[in-house]
Structure formats: structure tokens, C-alpha cells
Length: 262
Image (cartoon, helix red, strand yellow):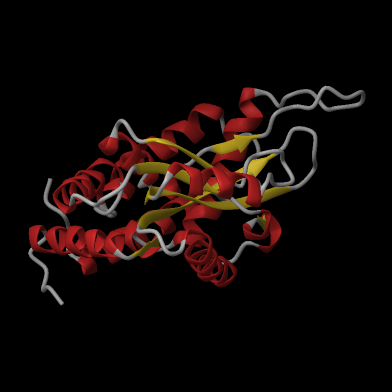
């Protein structure tokens, strides 16, 4: 499948957003669960098609450039999260999200300096079964070339967040293309992340599948509004040799799309 031009992508994402917002009309609580699933099966393919810089296609381009760069040092896959990046669902607006993206870029640069890295800013919805609030949860997946001892120090220094998750986590990257495809997945297609239920008296039972499906649709609508026409490379941050890798991969993508380079 050919990569559409920037203008074509813009038109198609607007149509996809208008389509889902129109079908997500108020006053339709009786909309069957199968209807929710069918709704997304109809335009999921379009949403992936309008974002060439996502999932396997973009991951293959990045992986090829990473191998060609032959960066010195050990390569590690990492994930970085921070409570300060979470946005209450009721306050989630494109402007607030863009502000958080800028905050993430600054934070990642400070934490990982001076080692080369490249990272994707991912976004999901987190709703805990033992809490009443739901949040948009931006986080970072990426690659870094640094000594193991330095990364272990980061794990200890950054500690854990309010949910008991390590703010910084790393592992050996044995499947480069697979990790990059995971990191580059399109946030518009994400499902809700359901927190672990705490064994505590008075906790509410885990919601039913029907409820989760309806919540998933509402959450996807929120993500469509937040991400709008952003493509995956718009949500990347990199440093040093990692920035050069991203630039070369983007150049390849634009050439394949027949777009003007520059």
C-alpha cells in the first residue's frame, strides 16, 4: 500500500474523527456491544493507513537505520513513566496534551543525557478498578545506548510512581523490529488499561465486558480528539546519534511517499 501524501492524510484523519464523533451520539445507551466493535472495525484500517509513521512500517525503517548506524555500546529497550504527565480525563484537551508532550521531551532529555537515545511518546487511558478517576496516561518507549550500571542507577534514583510501577524500566533488546513496532503503535487504537484490583474490603468488582467495551469506545474518541492529525514522528524525541537515526528514517519515508524532502 502506498503512503498517502500529507494532505491526503489530513483529509482522511478528519473524516475518521468526524465519523466516530457522529456515531458516538448522546442518548444511545442501548447501542449493542457488537455495534461498538463493528464501529471500530470499519475505520481502524483507515486510521492505520493515514499514519504511515506507525507500527511495523515505521519500525522497519527505524530498525534498518539503527543497524546501519552501528552505535557503540550496549543497546537497551526502556520505558519511562511519570505521574506528572497524567491528565484527568475531564481535563483532557489537545492544548493540555501538547503541553504535556513538551514537558515529556524536556524530562526525557534531562534524565537520559548524555547518552544517545530515541523514543516514542505513547498514550493510553488508565482506569483503576479500585478508584473512581480515569486518566490519560502519556509515557515513553524507546532505545538507549548506555552502560547497564548507569541504567540501574536511574531505576533506583527515579523510584516508583503512585501506582507502584517503576518510573524507569529497561531490558535487553533482543527483537529490535518487534520492540520498535510496539513503541510505534498508533495511540488512536489503544484500549483502556485496567489497573490491578487491590485486595481490600469494599473494593468494587471488575467491570463487565460490556461495560469495558463501551468505555473503550468513549476512550478512543478522547484519544482521537487529543491526537488529531499527529503522526508518530511528531511524537518522537531523540538525542545525539539517535536523532540522526530518526532523521534518516523520516527521510526514507518521505522519499517513498514521493514527498518533497526538506
